[in-house]
Image 1: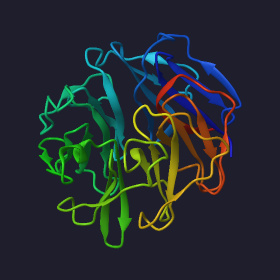
Image 2 (image 1 turned 135 degrees about the vertical axis):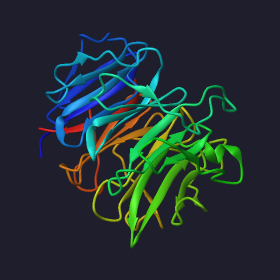
Image 3 (image 1 turned 60 degrees about the horizontal axis):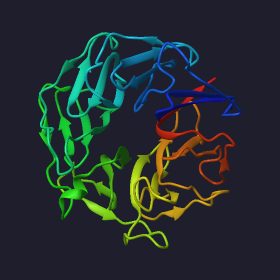
Image 4 (image 1 turned 120 degrees about the horizontal axis):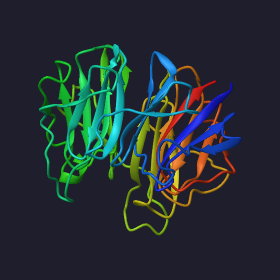
Length: 326
């Protein structure tokens, strides 16, 4: 399977790795090569149509899988931390900002701020909307996860919102870094990650069961700090990025093959030198995943996480990544 890896960095702009990351090119224009690119999204109906956010410069888009980019006129005034297409209507795009949430109905040319339950303050300052996700089986249901402000949900396509409240016994369980949905029988399971690990809810967010990952030797925490989560294939695979803290000195990838009941730490060819931060998958590339650390290491598996390779190319601070089928 041939594919491209697109990587957004802090201070190093946007990078494109062709043929699975064998050859890399930094995007030199029209965006600044020293920009902060914190969020990426791929159109679920057109894998060559990509979005990238640039701090203080707005949203860019590509229609050729990341080789060429053009600037839109939208959202230059607020840092964007997450982007998502609505799979039921790809003209509708969500942008999670710092703070808050915006929506577009014209393919990203213009956005309006949504009236949500997301706070404009949190214990460490201004909260970031870390993930936006539209339920693929329900066009009306949209989720937004927020730094130290939990999980928020709309049942009417973003018109009104509710907070799902306290997700754990202390406020930092609401420091939601990753979010995913997973079919579980007749129900849809909600999955979140926080500094404490993986939270799972099988009752629509009313209650949560938490799984703490094995700590790292020498870490000041008794558990592994957790970031991105993916449930990428039509099986029971759950993948979670972990590390000792943020940005961290070491990281790992946790893999479950039973829907999150149990995990094993992946055997990587080289120990990450920072917390593992982001996971990139694509439905047209079953079994393929690219995992990136905070400080630029990239690991790729093409066999459903059974084995992993580390790419020779290392980048700066990675914040987001995509896989684009060739």
